[in-house]
Amino acid sequence: MSDEDKSISIITESYEVTELKSGLPSIPQLVTKVVQVNEEDLRDNLDKFLGNMFNVLSSIKTESDEYEVDTVQLSLMIGATGEVAICGTLKGGISGQTSLLLTLKRKQKTT
Image 1: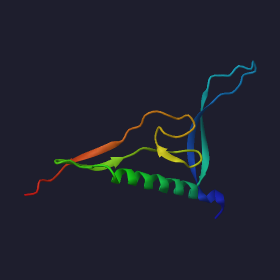
Image 2 (image 1 turned 180 degrees about the horizontal axis):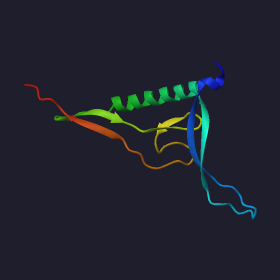
Image 3 (image 1 turned 30 degrees about the vertical axis):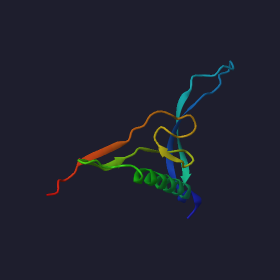
Image 4 (image 1 turned 90 degrees about the vertical axis):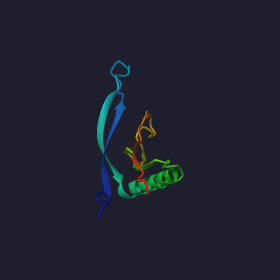
């Protein structure tokens, strides 16, 4: 299996500025590209991310007297070089907010 067969296509978006003939920069243009990310790099980065996330989640309180956290949902981004992060936290100028969706479930009353 060639190295190309061991990669995953990732669609990336970034703003690029090109200089006009006058030497002045133009308005940044959003450019979409398809890049190849090495399967092993992506696997290693995802494994590391999940390990860290499991450590965080296992160290927090997930229940009260009446409710418990049933589901935790994250939106992840995969960068052009295979880095994995919660949306809004990648390097390279991408910043902003993200959300964490928690589903609470009422505990069953034991009799």
